[in-house]
Image (cartoon, rainbow, N blue to C red; front, side, top):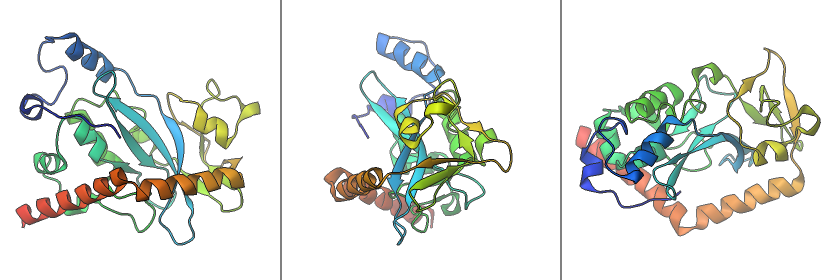
Length: 248
């Protein structure tokens, strides 16, 4: 996840990128980018559950400049009524620290979780789709994250069957991945514009090779052991603790 120093003007100015006249080409680029829906991509991560199941996700990037972006992650989980979304990249993309974001939207501790009983691939401010959608809209990212936070896809899920396969109740639209070439690898490699829900009761199965599963595990171990990964999780927990202390 990329980051860049934010000026006090960014922190204290209007939340919407369209709230003030454009003064530079960078401002104009940012406003145009905010109007454009961010492409989705399918990704596999390692959950923290004892059985080491994979955590299928959707991801979308929020660009704040031509070279700086923040990746928003949505877990595709069949066990919960609503999907969980990473809130921290949305706040960072708006130039807010996590504490500033929590204070600005007056989020109660019940509005988010740092972990999800092992379902999560990493610690974050995991919040429900409705909450994430409301905050994204308030910060001017409603259009950019329209596909990611589409309420019509609330019930979309992908499940690791632990038998070299995944089951999905949705699919990447035909125009992006043809049915004859549909596979987990194709889903991961192709960006797409929306989630296509399958008729109720229907599912599609894709294979997960041992090599792919091993690669996901290896990448998770590298991320969890990296300085960046450790600092992110410490920041998330410290920010939540500071917010709770200030609210108590």
